[in-house]
Image (cartoon, rainbow, N blue to C red):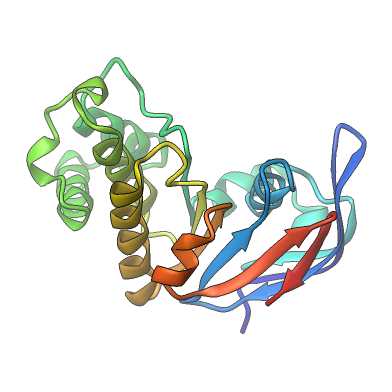
Length: 220
């Protein structure tokens, strides 16, 4: 059964139509690319999945949540099941890698300190950053910061990871390493949807492609 399903959805930003007649579904464990030029609506579509951008027209379901009628108090529960990887990292600059991740766990209800420590060590090991937990974000390279962001997205064992241009601020080799990490995550059973305008990545790392052009989705 699809964990994301959109039918005849229209997405608006500030009353302007960004995307129209959006129809797509995503199955558990899929790796899906959303390809489109800068400004084509990729980010708006991803933000609609975690209810940052409201859906007013059409039908849209993520897990068991009906997005057009989702209540405000349900949104944190929806987002707990989704990991988000941003292009610009969005790490807290005034605290260490460990403290960045611990902040997220405490904010999402992890009260046991030992359990938080185990979880942080697990996700940092998974992205090859176990020995960098004491570092401040500015002491890390761009690729290392993005690995920490991926680790952060994995903290609550999400069913879906949304990666919005995760290689946009990285050199090609480092970007390839990040995409390889995301593919490993998908291979382990987590759905990954990655927005990008880098067509070369598609040639190196296979995945289903959804193209965004002229405000519409084109399934390739």
